[in-house]
Image (cartoon, rainbow, N blue to C red; front, side):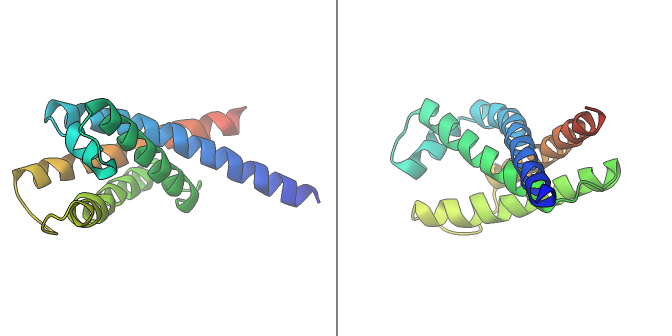
Length: 145
C-alpha cells in the first residue's frame, strides 16, 4: 500500500514540477513572442485577437507541455542529457505546434519555413532549455528536502 501512495505522490510532484518549469519556459519564450507581436496570433487559436488572451493561451499550453516533459524524461538524466532532451523537445514542439497544429487550426499552409518560423524554432529551443534547467533545479531541491 505504501508503494502505490509513494508512487502517486511522486507523480504529483513531477506534475507540479512540470507546471512550474513549463511556466518558466513559457514566460521566457512569451517575452520573445510578445516582442515579435505574436500574442494576437496565438489568441486567434481561440477566436480572439487580444494579446492578453494570447498570453493566457500560451501559458496554458506551456504548462501542459512542461508537465508532459516532466513525466516522460527520467529523473536520472544528468545535466547535459537533460539540456539535450530539452532542446530536442523544443524542436519537436516547434514541428507539432507552429508548423502543423496552429496553421491547421487557422486555415493556413502547413510547414511554412520563413523568418517567423525560424524565430519560432529558436524560441521553442529556448523553451525546452529553460524547462530542462528549471526541472533539474526542482528535482535537486526535492531530493535534498
